[in-house]
Image (cartoon, rainbow, N blue to C red; front, side, top):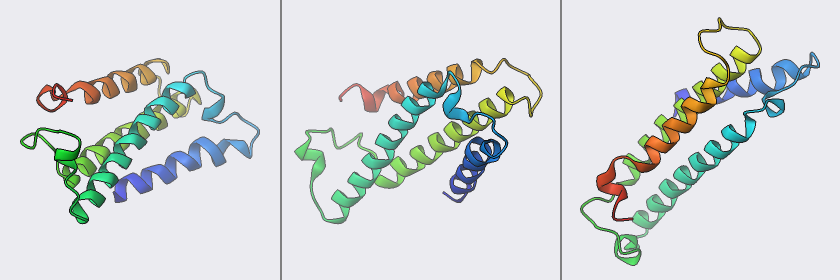
Length: 137
């Protein structure tokens, strides 16, 4: 979580405050911003699901049977938070690299439009895999 918070500060500094003072556009003015906003929304849903599961476990609410989940394949809150942390790191890194490549601060190894595409592919992979835990839902 420490790496996520430091990376979030870096992204916020570079994408918002770093270029507004010079009169340049922020990431909100880029064409791929709706892609980042949608993937960020899915990421927030994952974090809030982990918080909900943690609270339900803490107060001994049997949400597994309440929602009719298969108890053999339900993740613990720690596993959900670990997955959400990995996804947050990937999201922030791709957002930072997309913004830096569009501002020409880094070498153009890939065109800037491929970074949102990679984020969508990553989000789809995380939504549907592993199939063992996704098919019963």
